[in-house]
Length: 449
Image 1 (cartoon, rainbow, N blue to C red):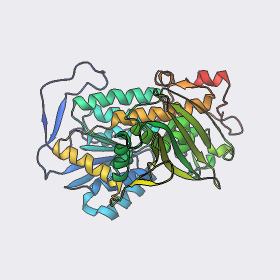
Image 2: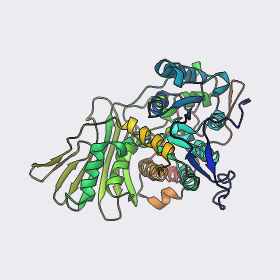
Image 3: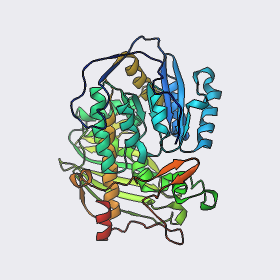
Image 4: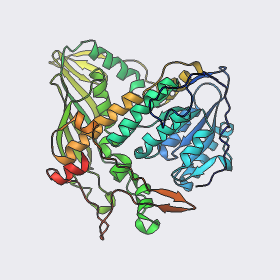
C-alpha cells in the first residue's frame, strides 16, 4: 500500500533521554527510550484510531470525551466504508475535535503503521488476531496505547504482547486494556473485600457469559472478492481473528476471577464444547458453547461457562464461594451461607468504559504509572487455555498453552490497490464448509498445541 503521510507529524512536545534500551528484542528496541512526559497540562493530545468498527468508534468517542484538549488526527481500517462511517459519526458528535483530512485516512492491512505515526495515543480495536502486531508497532514507535481485549488469540501473540509490555515500561509509555471492570467501583470494592478475607478462604469460583450471541455474518461469498476478504468481513467466526467467543467475550469473566485470585493464573484446564445450534457453514469454525474447569495452584477451581444459543439460561456474571459465604462479584454483594446479606456496594456507578479512558489520558498528561498490558496478556492466555481444552478434549496445562509454537496469523496476507491477497489459515472445502475441531482427535491436538 502506498502512503504519503509524513513520519514526523506530532502535536505534543516530549522530553527525550539520551539513554537507549538494552537488547530486549530487536524489533522493539530500534527507537530510543522516551520518557514521554507531557510538556504542559493544556497541550493537545492527538489520537489515532486503528479499527473503525463499533467498539473502535465507541473507544474513540470515550477518548475524545476525556479532560483536556484532544484531537482525532488519523484513522485506519481494512475497509474504507467502515472507516468513513465511523469518521462521519465522530465528526457529528465531536465536530472540531476531529481533524482528519484525506491524507490522514489509511485503508488496508498495513494502514495501522501510517496512522500510528501521526498521533500521541493509539486506539487499537481491529479484530483481536492483529492486536499483538499493532501493539508491538505502536511501542516501537514510542506511542501510548489503548487496546481492546483480548490482546491476542494464540500463545505467540501473548508472548509478543508480554515482550512489548516490558519495552513500553522502559519507554515510559502508558497502556490501557479494555477490561473495564477494573475501573468499575463496585467490582473494585468487592474484589478488595474478597482479597481481605471477608469470606474467609476462597474455595471455588464460577464465571458465565451465556447469551444469544453476536451479529450474524455480514457478507456472503457472492458479495466479496476472495476468501480472505470474506473471513475479514465476518471475523468473529474465525479463530485466527477472534479467538472464538471464549476469548472475545468470556475473557471479561475469566479476568475477574484471576483478579480475585490476586492475579494468579490457572495451572491447567479441562472441559468440553462444540457446535450444537450454530452449525451452518456461515458460522465459520468457532464453537457455540464451552464449559471449562480451570485449576489453580491452591486447589480451587473456576467452573466456567460461555454459550451463544438463543432460548437458554443467560448470565454474564462471576460468583465466589469462601469458607464464610458467597459473593456475587458482578452484583457487588456478599452473603453468608444462610443467605443473610453481609455487604452490598451502594455507591453511584460511573461508566467504566469512560473511566478507563479518563485514567489512561490522565496518566499520559501527568506522567503517572499506567500499564495494563501484562495483565491483559495473561488473562488472554487464560481464555486461550480454555479454548485449547475444549477444542482438544484434553487436560491442558498453562505451560503447554504458553509454550505452544502454533501461530494462527498467516504471513502472506496483504491488500494492494483494492485487491486482497493471501490465504487465511482456515480454508473451506468445495461446499464452503470449514474443518471443525474434534475433541479427542490426536491430530487436532497436534494442530492446536
